[in-house]
Length: 396
Image (cartoon, rainbow, N blue to C red; front, side, top):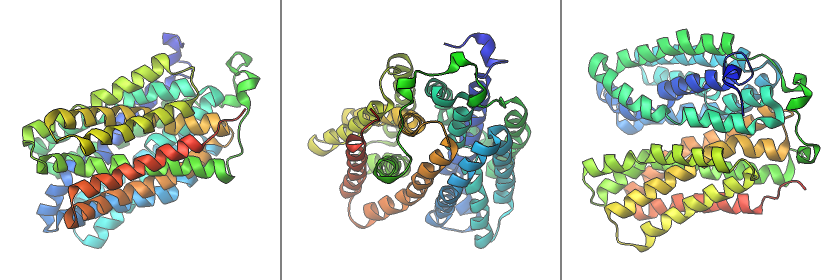
């Protein structure tokens, strides 16, 4: 375990720095649209579906550039690449305030998609892997523990700012935080060392260094598993609470159930950090996908009720907490630390593209057929993820 001083002058400073900047990035770029887009739509006379399509375009474009961001981090380091992500994000948020025309609005979301690709988990994981090499699993897990509070911080803060300064003022505040806090932290506080220059004591056992080539069937299975999983939280974050309300729960109960997600996510990450470090990350991913698939069973076989909905929310939160860690640790364990930034960018590209399509598809299914069929489609993607993880074999 690291000493306290390592978080100040040692390589573990990366975890402390990225913990802060991940909360800022997720809190400014990813979580606010749930609260701000209805206001943007009403202000500009657009439908909410049209306004939300901009967010989907941003995620899609982020997926297209994700591998390039990862390759740049491999070459130059997160301390060079991630400051640009924060500055581009700040520019995009200012542009969102000013964009009056539909074409300009979508153009701003393209910019914000690039910012998300250079600011969220994938570039943070790539930066940590460049610093720690094959020993990056524990720092990645520790980072997700801290960053897991992003939604807990962002939604109340966004709601408070909207009430105080409106949605435009909210985005200007967030732009200032990205430009004047996140970007300098990335540029000046992230460690610049590479794992190849680490002391021998940092090396890992040679028996653990056996890795697979990042191509062919192993890579396809891993990328498909994470892309299939990406469909689930993206679709559910946009539709689940509304579906529960249409199933008959009161808005107050629905909000209370939604609040269970964050603590369940953090609890699962604490368990992984405390007890799961000696398991191969592939087993953690399989367990997470299995928990998620199992969570749909009560919805399918039991009469709908508050306890059933709460059970699903808790199991979904636990699965998502573990799967976020697995996104960083499974590619590292299977394919190694060499070229990790490009690797996680390739995987993250398909992840973000599927993530961008899921809300639109599930909303269309729910609107034109039924909520039950929409949940069945989501469950099918969870099952596909579990199948791919189960079919994957770790190196000897």
